[in-house]
Image (cartoon, rainbow over all chains, first blue to last red; front, side, top):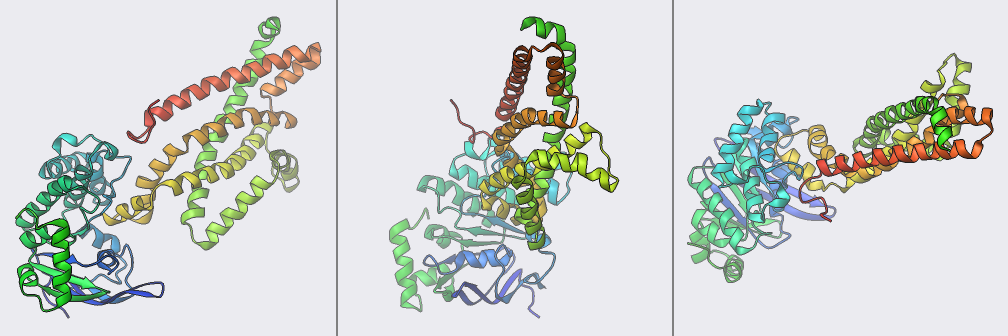
Length: 252
Length: 220
């Protein structure tokens, strides 16, 4: 029995048709930790996140949330309430205002009364700096604002951890900054986060651990500065420095 | 022509009342039925999905008049008797439901699959996601097709005259067969349909604008 990790992943495998995209991934996440997964496109980074809350069920392997096995549980909806998910394309409900997006999980899933849900929604929107946009619809928001609503929606469910699936990949650099700042402050407040991103600045300044993946395997994992300055694999160095060339070193 | 209208408008309007009654009941109930059919077809298991597909194929593949005759003239042989209006309403609900199911299927499938994924991610069940996230968007998108269906239904409800339901067309036929002014009587009848349809379409278009999601409507 695994012990005392908030999230533990054991020997995760996933196939898309004949192609094996995850070839046995294992790692764990403790309360308050932020881990960042990096790696080339198509290496299965997002698949791990989708496997965790079973939006895409894994083919093999086990995932534990606080020692409870969640890969085969019938109560996956309860698991999903405890694990937030932030999508690359925001995934906001188009027919609801920013506030409505944050509230609907509270009223329909948690059965919270409307007034209480509204208060919590406003609190979370304020937390991501969007109190004044509560009545805007997704199409009236910039990408950065939309993504921050996505984060507020995840936060409102009061999850034990939040998964971020390339949260800034469809944003321009300016908007990326406003989303990363929100994520950074969450990490500082002690939120547990698992982040797939190419933002090296964020990874270096926030991550407790950097996980470098390629070809469905974890090539190397460790403290970000170690991977940057003293990686054990040549491939890690090549890839990380390519990202730095492309995206810069970030704000730090 | 005006004198026809002035002489007979109480009778014509009584018939119109029946027409509008049949249409509204059939069209709205058809929507509810159509929602269940389309959900069964898209999200149901294989058995449900195939049953719905077969049902829709049969209803769309056979004439409305035949369906009406089976219900009104055919069922009494098995001890099921309906009044003309009830028989008309039942057959129109079934028929309209089948058509509306297909309009709805199109609009449900036009809502991005990411929407359901996001609903699941906050802990909704599949059916919560469908009812709270997918349907509210799909139903808005189906309003133009639904308006079409309503217009069609107002006019095709005149088929009920063949089984003697006292709707607008039945009354018109009775008047014309008494005074022999077929041209004028049917012209007045046509104008009544036209005016009523224009009024309904006006309100449906207003409703469509009212519920439009900002950013998803077109400013002209």
